[in-house]
Image (cartoon, rainbow, N blue to C red; front, side):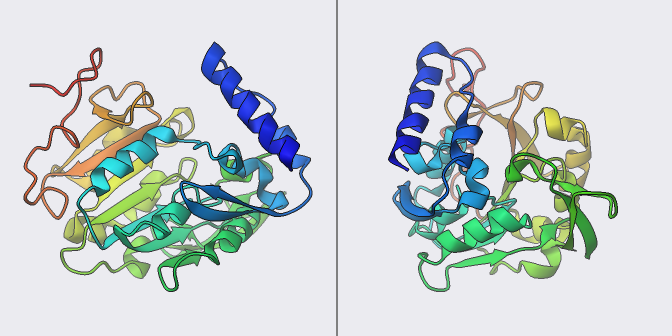
Length: 295
């Protein structure tokens, strides 16, 4: 276990110094055969070997998506009783720390992959009582049954596929409108990372989007671009939402939607904008070159 953690830190340093992709994380993780406890962002986690490849850098205290953590830290400043919805929560990189964050009132985490659901549940045991709910259903446009593709080497890359075929696991599908009911006026953050199913999840949350005006972060990279276009998301969200790129360099927003990993959908009204106006430090796009907010 100690060698594994040392290897993670070494690979991460090499990537930072030489700006190259750190290979070998999954192979190293798969060689760890025992469970152990670790801490990430001040929250207790449980490492589960079956989901080792999904843990990536977390056991060494290193975030897999540092830019998203930076952005969330900024938008949560001064907030309280936030409802955090994590669709495709994996082992809990976001759901677990959010459950221990005093600014967050409740966390709903959806993770249908059996191995990562087990790891998420093992870490959820240490969360404050009643604050974190873990759901093993997939999220889509409506209720039904789908199949989880288990052929991917990393459980985090598993995605819904048509029912039938080999190496698939039947899963129940739910729509967020049927299971999530924010309190009136409650600030809601919706994070979606489900390998191309993001648009269907948004379609199943139309009612909540219309009434609760959540701040939405969804994955939009080479995988998801093959499944839908941003114009499709705009049609679901409506004209009262603006889309921005979440910058990998610093966790701020800009308007370069041609080169994205995550996209942030910001509502024009609702709890996230009331009393804040156009807060330059949060929602106004930065200049692509300088990183400074536009005047």
